[in-house]
Length: 433
Image (cartoon, rainbow, N blue to C red; front, side, top):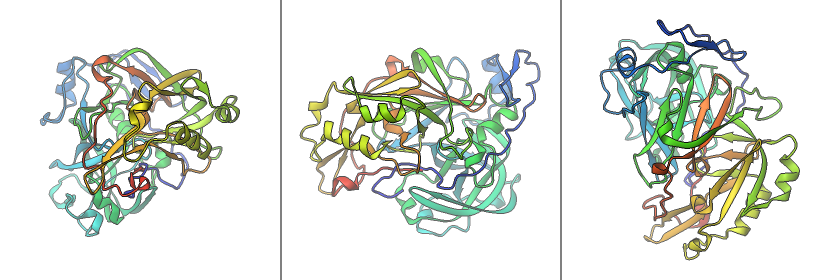
């Protein structure tokens, strides 16, 4: 994370996959079946509102929206449309932290009591002594992200998100973090990927929530709002909520990010084509049409990441001026990305980020950058995900996209105040965790 807002968090080290956990049927639920190969029991019946809140919800529901489906709908805020964050509680005393919700990593961490580094200043620190359920495993943990690093200790305690309390969740207390973490609004990271990306191969909070019979499926989904610094984005825990999308849900099986990595690592899909205003980009077609090019779906990345050649093509086609004086010439223009056999269309205005520089002047940049991951040329970051309702299914190892419902599909096109102090085009950030 450098500001240069970076592209968000992906651990640089690729780890081997740990076995997926097994789960027991929920008492009284009879409509169950086995997920392929993973031996994970899935409840096909959505609990009633009364069942859900009686069995699973905590007493504090202030941070959870109620929808007719009674699924926990977690409010997500954004910082300049660069980072999308939620609040969770850790410990028996529900200590609150604001965290980046990151599908590009697995570990959860927050500042620990020993963290006096610049990156921990003015952020809440977890107090082990005030939690009656705290256990220190004494295992060291270090994570290197594209945008910074964290060193700490693995611990175990209750972790509550959206009113759902998972017992004995492994997470980390940071002892040191990179100084540039001080510039971000979040306190730590809430990873949502597979054990292979965890330093100590821990299961994600979502998988543990399912194993403890707290959610109806090992799934979650996102609506990321286009409203600057807004609080109306949502994370849905469990199966999808239909009020956020319209039309069909298009599912895509995950593929290996690289030949040496397991499928259960990054949420990786196969890109088969790329068009600019309906015209095929031949180099992408040549490289990707047959077997597909891996694309990581990462809520922790601010930008759409592409190969160097593709970025050059995009910046040539859409030469956004830093002073923003030409951005409306791109109104109505589109790019599209084909995943498997499904084409996803993105308005170019969704890819333009506005900011204010240190003199109060508007500055603009195309929210596309070059991928820095060896062997992975594509990352679907926030500038892609804002156009769709995205669904992550850990049980079936698949990801889906659907068109946003009309109430959520408005593309607001307005200045983004106080994004960063922009002195040059390169100072506009690409957070990458």
